[in-house]
Image (cartoon, rainbow, N blue to C red; front, side):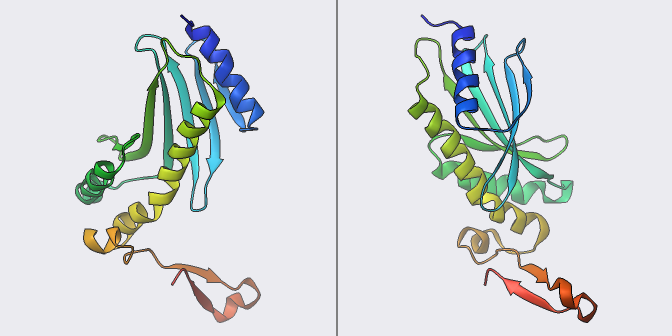
Length: 175
């Protein structure tokens, strides 16, 4: 049976080999903080090995907290998205509206292989990044949940042309 120290070293090597920008490592609690960017959002990624439950836990945190008056619609969206996801799920902390995607994988009798870790980190980043526009739509817009799930409620991003900033010219993006 592999011990947690073995898994810890394997995880650190994997992240270094994949050139993740490691910001903080806590060898005692077996925790790592890094940042990763997708197509839509940059995320804080916390990864740690829980010796007690013998799991690898990875969480991709959004840079936005959900306002209290939007908790109900975000929870409804999370419920619908989580129903379709087989591997991991979205979670919102009720106290402060911190929103993240989480995957937990047992490691007690297995050895981490790069392909397994590629799937964990790939699925987590994909899910968090892919669904980010939906969360932003319900947090900052007023579309119905059905519109958001159909892709009709995407937020309208605007680019201001910096050379004509005084003219306040804007171009619509993403339509």
